[in-house]
Image 1 (cartoon, rainbow, N blue to C red):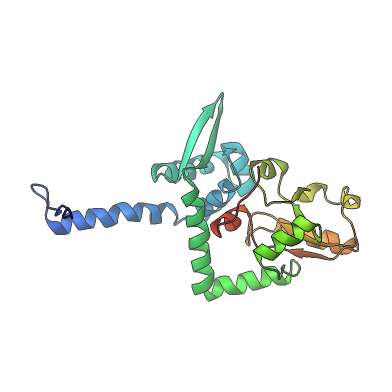
Image 2: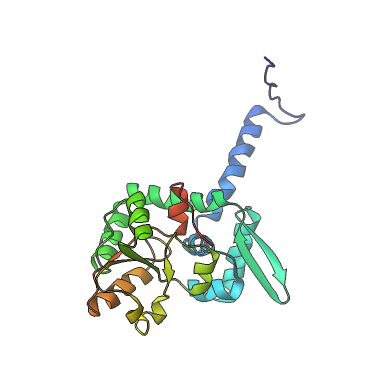
Length: 231
């Protein structure tokens, strides 16, 4: 068996300096993720490619600030960009970036009591959560026992959605409510547990006499658990 090469310091560098440099490189990811707005931009890009203007509107920040945050994310190789005419479009650099977002958010949910309390208040005000596991939900959606609706904007649905889900953006839900059968449970989802669109949809459905629940998963969470999405 070939022995691994022994790492040696380059001339003028001590082993301590090399080690410090390695940790410094890893810390670049942590620094890029240290801003709440940059985390929100990552979550938005988990939904699909968007231009700067779209991201600024969804994150409710200025285009200048969005561009600045995206520059930091790009310099840390978390996002990539392309130009089309006057527009610059951003997307995640790799699927692992979506899993990074899900993992860091899940860790925060497990360790931070303040976040647990905030999520508890969110659930209390946005309808009950779907209680079936993902495999069961997939089976029931495939058989038509439940109706799964994606309440994100249609462009995000087109970029990727849960299997058997139909696109009914929350902005269109009231005028399209007749499309949803009243004799079946409706499962609404949006961008993940921090997203408020699904809770709003559940409230609209309840007011119209439907039995509806909110799913915590978005496409990033679904994929992070090894399940496929459709495009």
